[in-house]
Amino acid sequence: MICGGMGTPSPATPEIQAVCDQVKPHIEEKLGQKLDKFEAKSFTSQVVAGSNYFVKIHVGDDKCIHARIYKDLQKNVSLHSVQQDKAHEDEIAYF
Image (cartoon, rainbow, N blue to C red):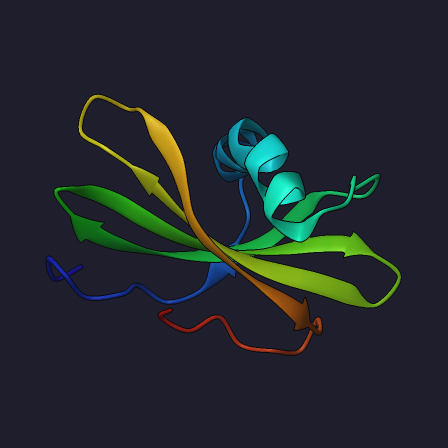
């Protein structure tokens, strides 16, 4: 992967689910609701000074969100932003 470029979307791994779980409270706060269903489905990443993860997360029914999560070189994880009202077929893109 080229530094700064985004990779090809891949199925979510247990590591990606763990990263998502770390920021779930922040996502719920941004959305203003509790999420009973919270399953990472796919992701792509961007290498910067650390990594940006762009993750499609199934949140129930036919609803998905896209989350941009940053993991620094010391492995600290933080939520950058969330896109709501996404469908399973929506592609993950830079945001």
